[in-house]
Image 1 (cartoon, rainbow, N blue to C red):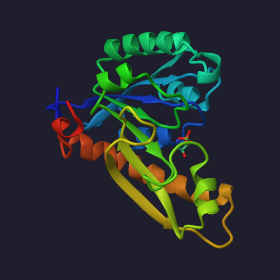
Image 2 (image 1 turned 135 degrees about the horizontal axis):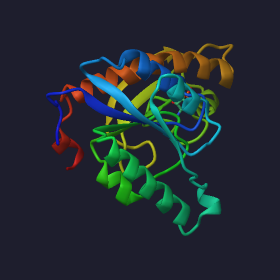
Image 3 (image 1 turned 30 degrees about the vertical axis):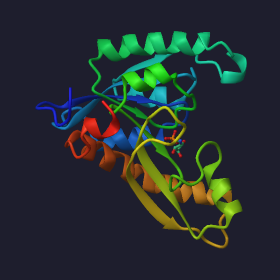
Image 4 (image 1 turned 90 degrees about the vertical axis):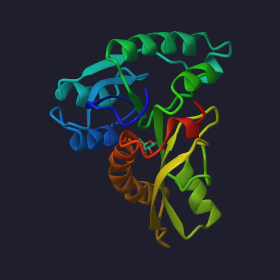
Amino acid sequence: MSFPLNRPANLAVFASGRGSNLASILNAFPSDSQEARVCLVASNVASAAALDKAKQAGIASKYHPFPARKKDPAGQGRAAFEKQAQAWLEFHKIDLICLAGFMRIFSAEFNEHWQGKMLNIHPSLLPDFKGLHPQRQALEAGVKEAGCSVHFVDAGIDTGQIILQKRIPVLATDTEESLAARIVIEEHVAYPEAIKQVLAGKFKVAEVGL
Ligand code: GRF
């Protein structure tokens, strides 16, 4: 399978939290969109607001535990999540996974299986400030610009090919919270735009290693 498809793409969104990026994706791709439909929302957090948003929109919402690495050194919990997730993804014939505030790291096998078909959004101008607390990292580094990046997921953490970025100035008065609040506004524009570019076939799967 490669993009563009000659039918609306089936999207899955994986989220661990409030789901504001999910909401922006749902706004950009309503259920009658000819470009894409969100068919599945999955979470590792049973109480995630993202799951409620999915239910309100009449979209399949699924939960399965995915323990943090520290509590799952042998990766059994991760393997169980991935097995369940793969079953959901196949059932809904998912073409593209969008990680949107999904706070877990998949195995190399899962990442490889979905290579070129799984995106993530990160609130920094990658390759700067990967991982946790990127806004805090940006303030501590004293950079003049911050922003967000949408990228393909590869074997690393926040390292995959960048699809697009949005930049904003860092203000002298910025705190971690104020910067995060201004960046997330850009995320809500960036993610749907990046999805459209991928679905339009702007990034050939061959370019990302398949
Ligand atoms: C976003 O800033 C995203 O970039 C980061 O986690 C946050 C999730 O926000 N990875 P939301 O759940 O989409 O509101």
